[in-house]
Image (cartoon, rainbow, N blue to C red; front, side, top):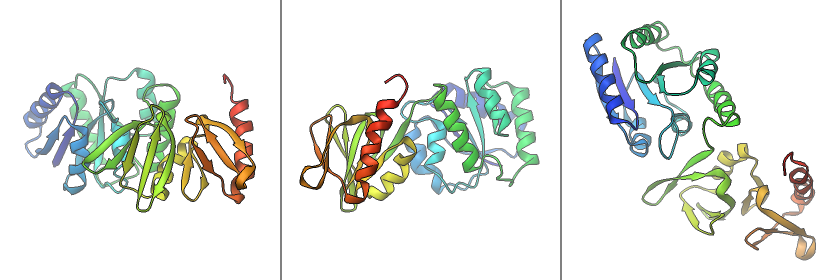
Length: 256
């Protein structure tokens, strides 16, 4: 049983290792880290059977980590300090979990369930993960952060801080609300695939925008958007009606 552990709290990792080694002679801890960025780079290259994964970690949640590993073949047991309400969501979707601090008897039960279902990747499926992620975001359990590849590693960004994105050939520049910029090692098409679930819209072949930062729309010069930072963004002819509709949608959003 080849095991990896990702948890931002070192003492939680060590307690889990002690319990595993004391109760499961075949437990081989091949990898453990309290650095989620390192885990994102390392996990795809590991041959493991089971991952113990913390949920709430600085920079990126355990759910978001798995979102970056769409082809993972190992089973997952979450470790969490979440409330009973969140845990109920886990149960409904048949995702294994352990409450912190990890109880030895609960660990034994979790491993038994894992062994009974080993190789059955009906849990957690990508659909279940997406549904759970949406539910927890809705109720404020986790924030909407994404990781983006940059020249020297990964950067973690609040989605709501992104105003718009501009294509730069095989790269994309993200323009943030604080007026900073981040060059991402992905095409705009790839960035759009990640951000469309957060209601970002491709208004032009070179631009993806966050409707929350639209200021006004001008029909002059073929049509363009003015964003909160006064940037003028061209709108393709095919997307003019969509953009006009976006203003109505944003205006009618409850609480706005």
